[in-house]
Amino acid sequence: MTTKIHALVEGLGNLARWQLTAGQVHDITQAHDLIEGVPAQTVAADKAYDADALIQTLVQAGAEAVIPPRGNRRQTRDYDQHKYKHRNLIERFFCRIKEFRRIATRYDKLASRFSSFIALVASFVWLA
View 1 (spheres, rainbow, N blue to C red):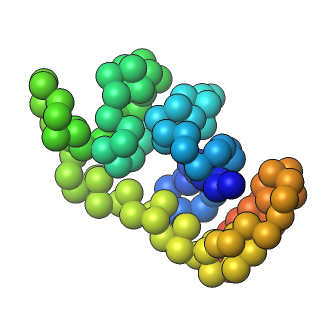
View 2: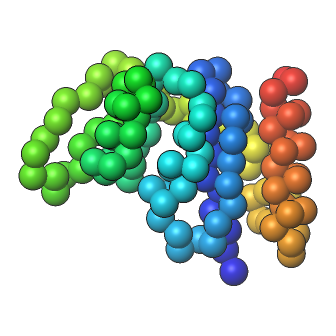
């Protein structure tokens, strides 16, 4: 049994929203739920989030999609490479929370307890 943490971080790298799914669930399936109702000027994500539907949703919401195109995309599109460098905020967030062994190994059997511990750790990271 594996678990994947889908996370949305704000501009300083602090956790804004998250969802837990089974490990085999693709990242793009949770993107709409995570960004829904969150005001943003720019949304940076990796190539896994390169989907026309998601990019159209971001444009309609008035946000700039800073997502590099996948290699197999027929119609290439441009993205701001300078802004994309800030995407590592999510990577740094995960590095900070995985210092807590309980999250890295998921000792909890119940998803609700695991999610609660993520919230607790995220609050410690936010306060640090």
